[in-house]
Amino acid sequence: MAVEHMRSWQIGDVTVARLVELWKFTDHINMTIADAEPEEVIAMDWLHPHYATPDGQQIMNFQGFVVQTPTMNVMLDTCIGNGRDRAYDVFRNLDTSFIEDLGTLGLKPDDIDVVLCTHLHFDHVGWNTYWDGKEWAPTFPNARYLFGQTEYDAWEEMRRHEDHGLHDVRHLADSVDPIVRRGLAHFIDANHRISDELWTEPSHGHSPGHIHLCIESRGERGVITGDLMHHPIQTALPSRPARFDMDTAQGIATRTGFVEKYRDSGVLVIGAHFADPTAGWIRSEGEGTRFFGIGLEGS
Image (cartoon, rainbow, N blue to C red; front, side):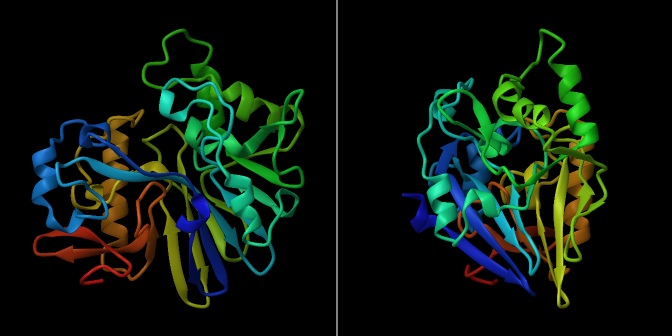
């Protein structure tokens, strides 16, 4: 089912391909913006029909990205994964074609050189591993798994406490610990150069050590957001509190800075959870800003 939803974008010599695990997931807008109501969504015509339902629910995807440079294959965030025990039914015991979809790009798990996790929430680390019949084993056995040091340390500290708030920690046992035990994890600073074309930058707030991926090749530029924002509405309302930000104030500062930096810049913005069109540009409109998805009116 997911193959038909795959998309790819070219940034110079770099190709970014989208692998979708959950397509057009709908929910109340206050699952993203804590104090938002459907009426606000309904009033923003540009969100419809791609990013919002007629009754003001948000539409989003759960997806990962394969970033191919001339010298390496990078898996950016690995979604939820199959056969997992998760806190919410919609994410529990999935049986998706994520790995088969990777094959449509001409790639096998063995071909992935780097796995980069923007942060360690369950829906960004799941396919780090798979169940081999006996244990959770690395899905990408030849890859260096890049985890932010600050991020990893924060989650290790969090699971030492009983109260985790909104942030479940059970995924660490099946999706992170097996990678660390096998010595495949490489702990990086927030500013990290992966290749000539790829590097990370800090975007803390959603999680303690959240990072996003920057791309530059042949004079063209792009950025993949991770969860510094979840929905295009946040390009227009970056200063509103996000429900799942672990540090609300820092999350607001990160989003507002991101929107200011990339507004009218010509840099292709690829939203980690954005529905189709997932890629586009942040541009000024009147006294504000909004997201112009590729192919939509005005883009």
